[in-house]
Image (cartoon, rainbow over all chains, first blue to last red):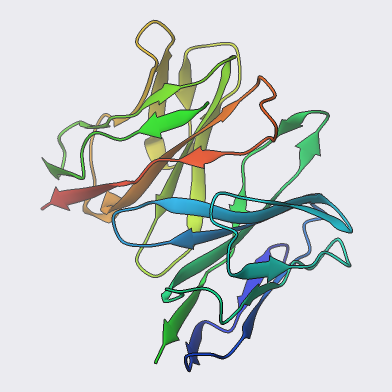
Length: 115
Length: 116
């Protein structure tokens, strides 16, 4: 099956700890994205990557870090510097056609709770 | 700068009635417009998109949307609502004019309740 997977589904973290959220896709998509979803605020872009070994900050990158060592993988680390990390995190991917990107395919999400 | 607005937090409709979920946008160039649906505790699923061409776009599950350039709107519609359509709907826009990064902006979402 082609698709995008995220793990774990639920994650609990103590204050001061870093945690890494996994995102893998086998759709051969060039672009990958991380979003944060909070109630009533829609999706906010954390980081995105259009090519291996390159990524750009989104609107709320502070306290987060990413890597893109492989086309298929785009892990997100939530660091202790993120002041309010409790949220639902969504990973997405899309193909790129020249300068045009297409619709995004989303993973099932990871719900992070800070205890 | 690009932006998208969904003016209604919630839309209530009776099963079998037509539904409309509103979306307006602002871009510097021409827009690429998208609708997504999210069921509880799930990721978003793509419904339809407008890139160019016919202003009426048909998508999955009987949904359609009409691009109106003069009103900068892209409202989602369905002729006859089903209870199973109850979900959270997101409108999204991307500006074709490069402004430092090709990012898709999502609206805050509209929750649709379809009553049997």
